[in-house]
Image 1 (cartoon, rainbow, N blue to C red):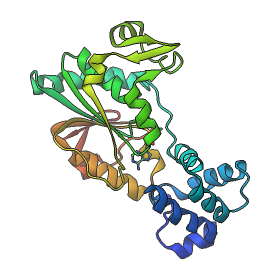
Image 2 (image 1 turned 135 degrees about the vertical axis):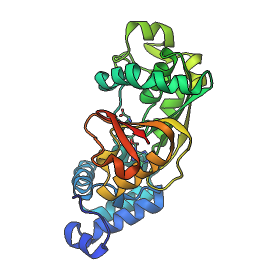
Image 3 (image 1 turned 30 degrees about the vertical axis):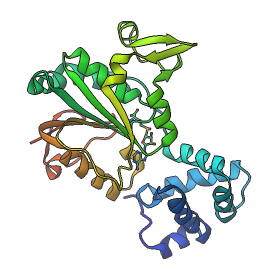
Image 4 (image 1 turned 120 degrees about the vertical axis):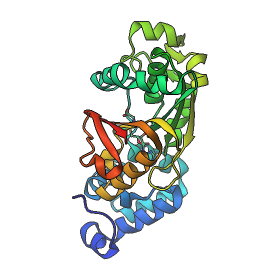
Length: 271
Ligand SMILES: C[S@@+](CC[C@H](N)C(=O)[O-])C[C@H]1O[C@@H](n2cnc3c(N)ncnc32)[C@H](O)[C@@H]1O
């Protein structure tokens, strides 16, 4: 089980007082509480990052962060690991399209299908969801939330390079994107279907009455306790019959304890 920053004395012993001080200062400056992230892995990554910037200890690093907004922004980008893709793990999106969405669309019969991309990064997942609902004949209403402002800004702009768009088929590219400079921009039909808001999965309230909650490649960074909190919230955010869609390496091991039952690998229905 991942160790958590529960007892400050343990953490001072394991990581040093300067790291514990750094975590507290980061929480004050950004609202990000590293105690819910796997701590050994996070400590190692942060140590490498700090060394790369030329700071020999976490105390001087945290003083620099307080004085320099750009440094703080750079660090937050690094912590939140916002790698994403359109239609990431295509086999799972095939299951979504063929076996999950048709029922959700019929249930809403012409009313918006309520979808949440929790940890939406730069918007690729939220727009992929809107496309999938449209292709299934539904009316998408997708909310993307993320803790990282820089990702949200890019998501709202909806502008992607040719490299970033590589998971999108030619048909979808023509239908849902327009050329923009060297890359593409999402068309109005997607823009209208998707909204982005800042939200911290570990502290903020969750939406409700959702048909589909999607949380992929986010849970992996959390401690077991953080993961359980988020899974409980995701399950509660669904209407009865609503579906949770998780990442390709993130099965829910005990779905029944959240009131969920497995439909397909990585898809769980609220019973
Ligand atoms: C690896 S990306 C996953 C993006 C997308 N879901 C996907 O699978 O392609 C992880 C995202 O989770 C966000 N994140 C990390 N901690 C978070 C938190 N506590 N609350 C909300 N989002 C968080 C990061 O900012 C990042 O954009």
